[in-house]
Each structure stands twice: as structure tokens, then as C-alpha cells.
Length: 132
Image 1 (cartoon, rainbow, N blue to C red):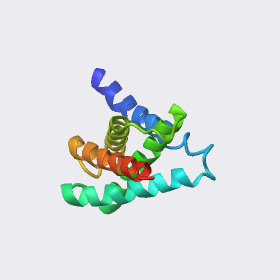
Image 2: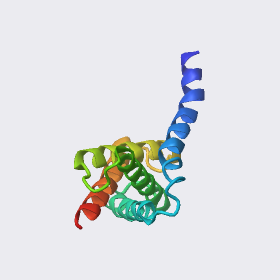
Image 3: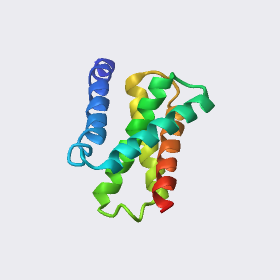
Image 4: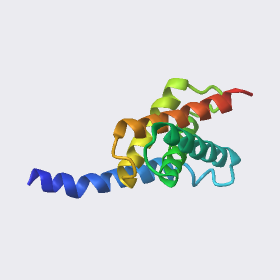
């Protein structure tokens, strides 16, 4: 019975948490170019880090990176201070979003590589946004 519950509710819980992380922060900032830039940076860095780790397809790695970019942007928007970003927070949020997206898409069966791809996206976004 416990295995049936895990197999039934865990995928829907992961999908709901991913939708909350990626879609809800993007709605109020739909006209904001910063969220689109972070999603693009995340997708590009996800493709590059996926190539380095040799895990998943280009589309899967781009999706993981884009989700990490949206999550990092949302996490910094929730703090209310987008100019003073925290590297540790960006890396952890990116890794969590990459792991969650990788679990949902199933392109790469190694959670560590999914976390590495998301963390790389969070790091690139942090470096890009703090260079100004």
C-alpha cells in the first residue's frame, strides 16, 4: 500500500511544486525582461552543462536550465532585493529546480547531474546579474 501511494502521489506532488516554482513567479512579471533573460540564461547554461555531464538531451537540459532560471528569478524577487543577490541561494535554488525538473522530465536518471545542471544555471545567472 505504501508503494502504491508513493507511485501515485509523488509525481503529482513534484509537478505541482514545479508549476508553483516556475509559473507563478512568471505571471506578475510577464512584461519584465529580467525574468525572460534569466530563463534564457538558464536554458543556455543548462545545455552547456548537460553537454559537459553527458546527461540527457538538449531539450531536456534546456528545460532544466530554464526552470532553474525562473526559480532563481522568483527567489530573488520574493526577497524584494534583486540587486544584492546571494550566490549560495542562487546555486541551491537552481539545483533544487534542476533536480525537480529532471525528475519530472526523466531525461537523465541521475539526480546529481540534474542538480549540477541546475546549480550551473543558478551560478551563471548570479554572475551575469552581479556584473553590473
